[in-house]
Length: 360
Image 1 (tube, one colour):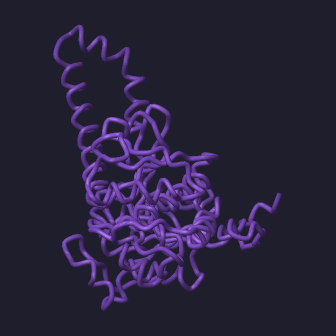
Image 2 (cartoon, helix red, strand yellow; image 1 turned 135 degrees about the vertical axis):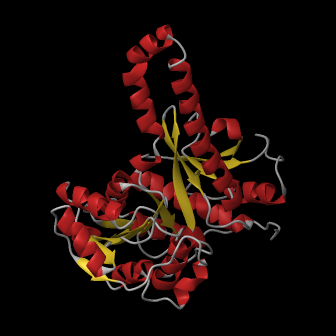
Image 3 (cartoon, helix red, strand yellow; image 1 turned 30 degrees about the horizontal axis):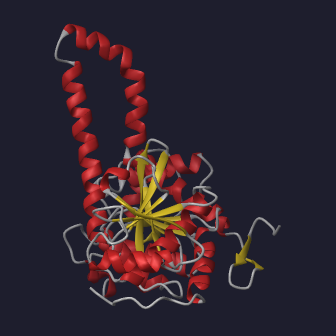
């Protein structure tokens, strides 16, 4: 057994010691998002009380005022600019003073251990790619989202970063998703499923069929074959792989359907005196269910494949989501998720790849 902060190079089977990233704070883009900077400050102060250090990045005057209002004290790094939700993601290249770029540079320079942003997701992905670069062997970074299931959670990758994909991208997503779930979610041997319109290997479009061949030949992952939409919330597999277009549709549908179902339940429980009485009895159970389906419980989603820790949250995130995002980032840091993902990608590069069509 190696030391707690050792990473095994799966290609050479040797232990490689790395410094613990937990010494640094989480850099929080405190301006990006609909409820910022108040939600950022309140959420960061709550994270601080839980023992998770945070540095706020944004307009210093506005952040100092929010800290004064809420009776707290946190380090602040000034950023004179912010990229709005309706602006172009590529603006980050020329707007180096934007809060998300400044926060990402803190990670690059070793002044912060991770970056969390609840702002423009495309801008966050672009900033992470520009400032941190990609892990060797990764063609495209991908967003991993947690889908609640009857057995806990399933990791969905990619959930929105890459609309158009090649088969080798999906192979890389499978390796990265497996590494993250294994290390951060403590699933010893995560199973991997590929989204398709049928369980049979020959089902799916050209991309899915080619990706199936690659995944079946990939060592280091437990490929369980194709999975259908109905399997996503049963916990049939631990990691679900798809392109970012399909993944984002799945994620948004799941969030919207959860809200709709709870609205229907609430209406039904208020429809009569007997229903309201029954509602009082089931309220504790419904609260527990609502907590499982609440995106703010995770707070933010990891961007896997960049050479550092970057997390993307909802633009409508509240203070609770900010706190959860910081906790999620710290869990990944404690698990050395990026370091172990890097080792997994090194192993993939050393494998002989079967010939597949390059489509799409």
